[in-house]
Length: 270
Image 1 (cartoon, rainbow, N blue to C red):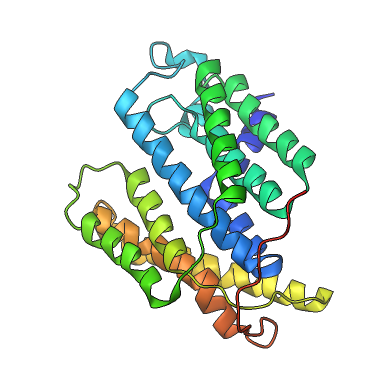
Image 2 (tube, rainbow, N blue to C red):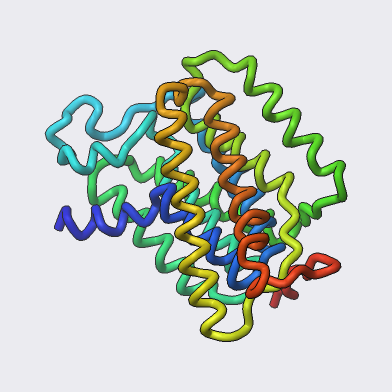
């Protein structure tokens, strides 16, 4: 059964989150994607802060044989709260909250990912439960608190984040740099384009959008490999990745992603 739970638990990886946010932003709701992205970054930072300040062990800490090597490889950092549970809940329930529908499929997927952490013996129930509750709270935040981009002033918080990251020590947890980079990118983003309406346009934008996104993702990883321990480099990497999705891909695919004068409002919630 480990192979099945590993497959499910890997749906809580960063690469999956990047794929889902990119496709949702490009194909469904640009402003909603930015909204969920900002909240996702805030949730990511909260999870990192709690994990490393509480520094609680995982089930296999005292007995490594409790979890397989493959399962332990999915478990980075301290135990509480569960990052897989919290970030999956933030993303999928956040998307459902912004769209005003899709709660049950989202909840079912989040429940499977959360349970996989218990089945693989990489988290205690308290780790998973706390992650789920935090994820739900951030999902509701995505639906209730608008993070609307305001002209050029939207760049100031992002520039401040980059400036602060220059003074962080090399020993800073990598997750902190990732979260700050995502936050800087989504705060600066202003995705004023219309998603394609026809199937062929969606296929083109989806395929080429992901190709460009992951080409940049892996290219930056390779180019900056020797500097990856520097928090500022990690912040810039993820901020640039967000801007590639929200600004770069629409500029390249303007034929299928026409420019709009004003951002589309978030869908009304049921």
